[in-house]
Length: 343
Image 1 (cartoon, rainbow, N blue to C red):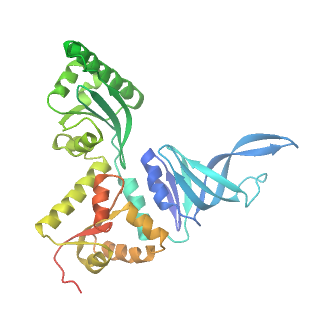
Image 2 (image 1 turned 30 degrees about the vertical axis):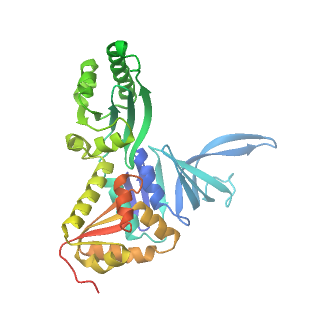
Image 3 (image 1 turned 90 degrees about the vertical axis):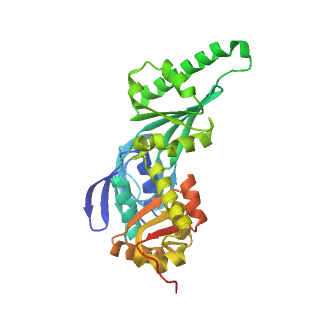
């Protein structure tokens, strides 16, 4: 995300990556004013209608997020003369779009989310976890990973297993090459139990081989994907991937709790200890529930204290393992500079 312009309660934004759509989904709320280019059917004559590209401003009623776009619904506030004001319309926001967002009140939460989106350095990473029976391909994203496909090997007939296995490695290498040709990944993580990754590397003779990083995992499935994402061998390659960083932050928090270090978790305890915080972690589910229950003003007070103390605020997605652990602690937790006495 990039802020192109900011005036009072209005910001003009460039959507740079698919992950930015998730941030916008978290920031855009009913009652906001959103402007951008869109398409709408316009009646020509009595019967005919044509789809026309135009610039519209809507008053937001709701938003719907998907991996490819963000659909924001609302009522038209401004646009061409041939478009009825007050009519319903949906703006489809995609990667590369420029939008203008106007809020009556920008809360600390909104600015922190926007700041996190703008500072995030995206790294395009492809992971393949495999053994001789199957290979699972996934793309690392802001909120964990997306499984792209799975291919299977055939090891039922042991007398032919060596030949079939060799063909399977070639199939994996070919599939990796196809994905690389379409996306141009920064890193390609090859993870497997035992020595299977060495077998695959012998079959890779493509220029992107220098991008590969190998890791050892215990299984060739989604558990293996999570393991690869957190493995020491790939942390250098994944350090720019927010999903990996988020899980590591939660692991640090869990370690601090296990050691009896100064930590507060749960809304009540964090509110009392906010002035002593060095780093606040907040889950996406915690924020979503606070918004639904109209408790954001309570959370805003915590954020203001945290900001006043120059502490960091990091939002953790609840869809991955780290987010689920944080939700188990109440969805909000803080590492403290010093221990405090509870009231």
